[in-house]
Length: 353
Ligand SMILES: [Zn+2]
Image 1: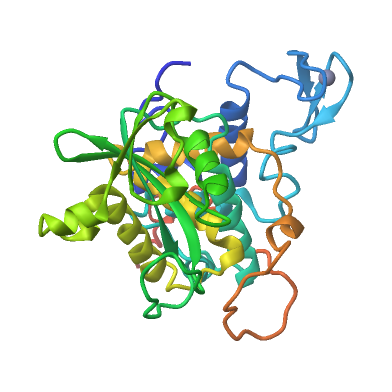
Image 2: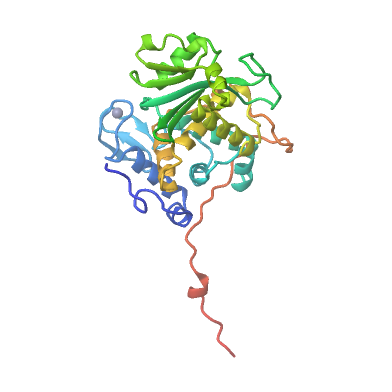
């Protein structure tokens, strides 16, 4: 399929979104089109023919296996209606800064905070595209502390309450910023920093860092290493923070986003997942159509393996659960909106008398 077109392959506006996805069946059909653009293909045997069963599922004519459009995707066995999923996805993709779990719960009348929280985490887990291209050209790399409670940590690389995070940002001459990558690091040693650089930056790239010893040896890994000394910068009377302006800009945007949209309620165990979302937003920031971002998120969602709730809470469950009466995990009512029959047009007028 060629490049998706606004108004045909993804909605141009909220109005169009609402008109297209009135029912759970509309949403299911869209997911089917996204997952199998050329028609059904069996995930088990790879056979490309099958037929639709009476209950909407598919049967493979190769191996006889039965499956559904949502099986094996992040919507696998979801008890949340697809209309609610689509609305959550629209808010996630089209909001400039995304949405917090608490706002999502309130906006879509989702029964529990945990359900809203898990939906957003599932969306976050799909927006890291496996095998995505590494950064290239000229890239600044640095580490910074992110998350935790804002405290006046002394400078230097001593470990505080925050999480040490690797930041890599493409520089576009003369003053622009390209794509970025952010990831929590175990520590600031070369055994953490070298794999971070190798996983996210193409060999041959010019990598700009400060003088920290953890970056020594990048030339041997095939990079053109340009290390800038803080001391030389200070000697020139310049601010040492200006040494790597692009990474400082991206890191401060990220910190502001965590404090703004998520009110700083991000714990260490889930920081990586929030960083994924931030990086995705940052790298999509110039996308002309927000509907296109919505399309991309759903396209990734139907190509992504199921994410179990148990895996999301493996280390820590949702934090800062607002005080709500004890209840089971709530599943929201469908947001289905059947076409209105315009009673004002069809109803007979009372005979005037
Ligand atoms: Zn099959």
